Length: 171
Ligand SMILES: Cc1cc2nc3c(=O)[nH]c(=O)nc-3n(C[C@H](O)[C@H](O)[C@H](O)COP(=O)(O)O)c2cc1C
Image (tube, rainbow, N blue to C red; front, side, top):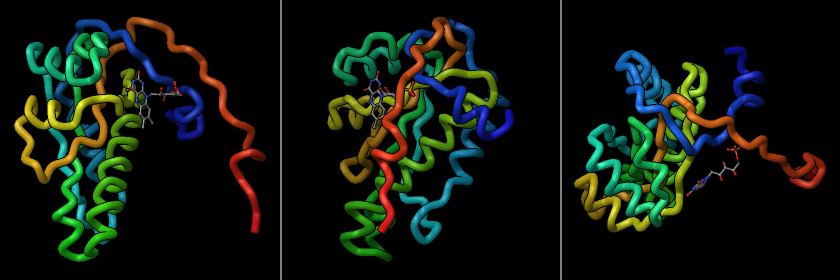
C-alpha cells in the first residue's frame, strides 16, 4: 500500500475473525519489525509469537480483562531487554533506549500487518508480572506492548487527532 494511505487507513481493531494469519504474512511482519531502527543497532528487545488459544486467553486476563484480545489468532508480545542496551549506554540505555527499541519495532510490525490486509491494536494496559509469567519471560525482559493481529471482524472507529498546531511549535 502507498505509505501515506497506509498511515491514514490504519485504525485499531478489537474484533477478529478466527482465520489464522498466514505464515508468510507473519514472516513479513517480523521482518518489518527487525528492520526498525534501534539505539546503536543493538535491538534491545525480543518478540514472543503467541498463537495457542490458552496462552492468548491468559494474555487477555493479564491485559486487565480485555477479553477481545483472546479472539485474535496471533498476538505478538514485545519485550524490552534493558541489559542489552545498558552494556553500551548505561542508565540511558536501560531506562530509555530499550523501551524505545521495542516500541519502534512494534510500530513497524503494526504497519506491516495493516499493509498485508490485517488488523491490529496496540495494547499497553496489562499487568507486567503476569505477562512475563504467561510468556515465560525473565525479570530482565520487560513487556512493552501486546499486538493482537488478525482479520478484522468490525469496522474500526475513525479516531480524531489533535491539530498539528497544538502538537508542534517552532523554536
Ligand atoms: C501506548 C498505547 C497503549 C494502548 N493501550 C491500549 C489498550 O490497552 N487497549 C486498547 O483497546 N487500546 C489501546 N491502545 C490503542 C489506542 O486506544 C488507539 O491507538 C487510539 O485510541 C487511537 O486510535 P487508532 O489506533 O484507531 O488511531 C493503546 C495505544 C497505545 C499507543
